[in-house]
Length: 128
Image (cartoon, rainbow, N blue to C red; front, side, top):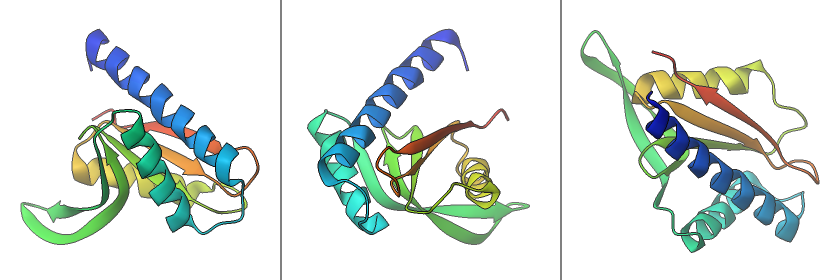
């Protein structure tokens, strides 16, 4: 990733995280994940970002499609966003995002947890 690409991605991440905080501030905690997904979609669109919801992406093994996964959100065709409503983010959530990055070939995934009054988030980067 070159410096310009990193700067562009970092700016988008700031916008996404800011939008997630706005959703959390407006809705609070306690809703199902799907509610936050839809609200974040609205907020990101309001901020001028192109977002695809529940995008199916194929998984390949030795050139053959062996399955697929569904990412919660894809922002600007560059950043995956995986949403959770859990007590704590754990290793399996991180592994899920890493697998999504490997399968999609994208470089960045944000993992966002709306379970608590203040969101938790993690940025995961595919270094391949």
